[in-house]
Image (cartoon, rainbow, N blue to C red; front, side):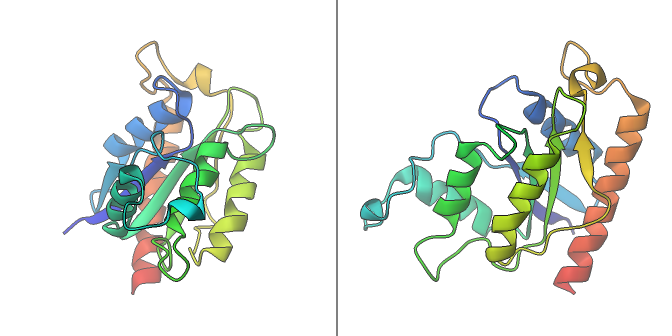
Length: 184
């Protein structure tokens, strides 16, 4: 039986490198993992005043999709040495209303992606900060920083690097073991 993993992409751009890597991860994932993309682009900014019986439909959809997952895999670019605002908003929407967080106890992993050389190191580590508070045990090893990502993908957004493909397969294998360890 497969473990359902919510796959959340921090970039909203349809043709983003992060989205391309996320789609590749779906095909490379360990056989015990079922990665399901959960969209964040339609989430209104979190505002407690909207937390009523008529809360935004996008919030309700997002919360239900992530609640049904047993783990979360984040794939994110770096914006100004941190995570994109849309990703932070998704974390906030999912953590509310207080006492009803959809994140608590879900094992997580992060793949950060950048056209630059350092592979979105800042975003990767900034994302870890709120995940600790949200009670999400984040896989520590192996770390995944994909730098110079444009050189790793062909014109169709598919991996052309066997080394990167092997690395990401190993990463998802390690994530499957991490989930098993955390979930018992």
